[in-house]
Length: 211
Image (cartoon, rainbow, N blue to C red; front, side, top):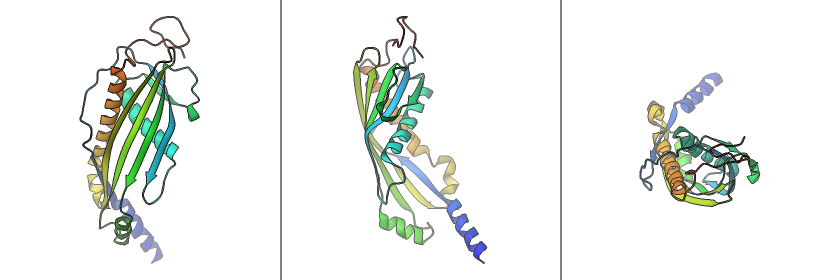
């Protein structure tokens, strides 16, 4: 009997899914990649993560996850060559640019809705609205010139039993939000002059990046 109850609960958990929809604060854009891709070292600065109902990860961890989502898109789109995380702004000087994330991430949800959803084994859905207000500070390692960019956007998550059937589309909203934030951050930095000219690190030869 006990094993059947446990199996039933596991089926409920496995059968519970979610679907996300993107916010509408940012429009889709198509930035132009630079003529020469550069390397980036990135860190998390003054970043605050808040989730109603308690924190599942620390603010620093949330910031690292956010940077990974944005910068892997930069790499895929050909905006940068590669990126590396360094803790506590301990930049090594081995990359062309140093990038620091600051700002906030806030997850808004009704605790009562979560409670009653749990009581009904997630037959009643609940939602989480995740909002971002973030800033990037970028420094050219060779020249010391600084650039800044900021964006604000969000996505909505609906959690309910049997939404697992929408799994192929469940992440489309959050992915679209990260795509837009990444493109707008890059474009703001590019229009200020970042990434446009070759950056030399550890060498006086133009067009090379030291390792």
